[in-house]
Structures are given as C-alpha cells and as structure tokens.
Image (cartoon, rainbow, N blue to C red; front, side, top):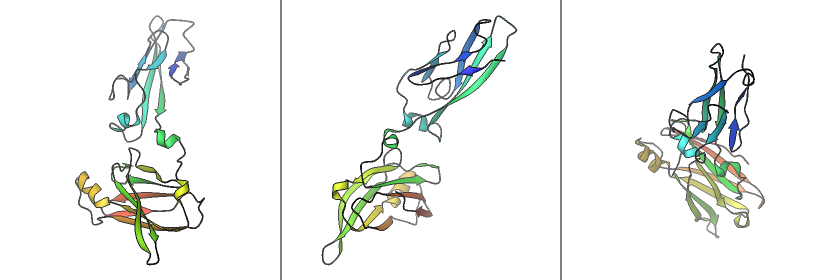
Amino acid sequence: MHCFTLSLLLFAQIKSNKDKETKVFYSITGQGADTPPVGVFVIDRETGKLSVTKPLDREDISRYVTAAQYQLRMQATDLKGQGLRTTATAVIKVQGKDESEAPSSSLSTQVLNTLTGRPATALAVHLSRLEGPSLQWKELTQSSTNAAGRCPSLLAPEQVRAGTYRLRFDTGAYWRQQGYASGYPYVEVVFTVTEETQKLHFPLLISPFSYTTYQGS
C-alpha cells in the first residue's frame, strides 16, 4: 500500500512510502493538469515535485467549474515491482484578493446569481443617502460588482454618518445582458445607520423572478 504526503505552498512534493524500496513514477490528471485550464500544474515523474506554471487565477478556473478550485488526481506507479498503483486526490482552492483581505469600507455588498450559483459580475450598484430638510435622496457613489460579485468599498469609514441610506441594484440591465427578461427593473435596499463605526454587509441573491437580501456585518 502506498501513502502520500502533500505540502503545497509555491510548489508541492508528492511522496510515496514505497519510493525507497522500488522505483516509483508519479503523474497527475484533472483540472489544471490535462483538462481545462490545461498545464497549470506539472509534476516531475521521478521526484514527485508538483509545480505551478503560472499564478493561480480564480477567474481562469471559474470559467470551467462552479467552485473556484482545482481537483487533481495524483498517481504513484511501481514500474519495477509488481506494477502496484495507488491514487490520491488533492483539492486546491483559489481565493480572490478581495476575499482574503478584510474590506476597509464600512459598507459592502455581494450579489449571487441563483440560477447559476455563481457571483453576479458587472452589476451596477448605486448608494444614496437621505439629506436636507426635505429629505431628498443624494447619490454618494456608483460602482459595479467585481469577479466575486462584490462591491467591497462602497463607503469609506470617514464618509459614514448616522442616517438613512439606499442601495439600488440595476438588476434589470444585468438580466438583459444574461439573456433573460426580469420583472424587476431594479432592487432597492433601504437601511438605517445608527453609529458611524457600524460595519454593514448586504448580500443579495437574485433570479429573474425573485430576490432575497439580509443584513450582515
């Protein structure tokens, strides 16, 4: 029986517990090896060293699979003995920069397309605040969701003050770009900020026929 140990930083080395007893050759298959995106990972068949040929790109792998991860099937084969063969699976998750860093904004949002289970990208988002004696909406900023479906920095901490705010998502235009007709030309989320230090996060789940949101932190 073969056993593997795997350690992955910039590279990894796969090691069979039989490599001191007989000649073992290593190979890999799967996403990033011999299926799209091809050639991201390569392995030295004699040493078991696993290397990456380019920086791991979340958007690159997301074009082929729903989850932003690579799944590699690693194999060790004893060619000089009895042809013993064993396999193991490694799952390498790719994290976007804006997911690994805490947002510096006091207000953020993320939009998920529930038809595909993937982030809704390039969706326009407007942030407004009620201002003046007549309480009119004043637009503070306009942004659009990134590859992770996020607008991580809608409002800097120094811009926040107590009041009533509105997030407007241009969902109608987004669905037209996706080839769907939607009954909702836009989605508005109105909320109150009571403390200037308050951090708010509003996830939004959308389909052409419905939407769901809630307040996080």
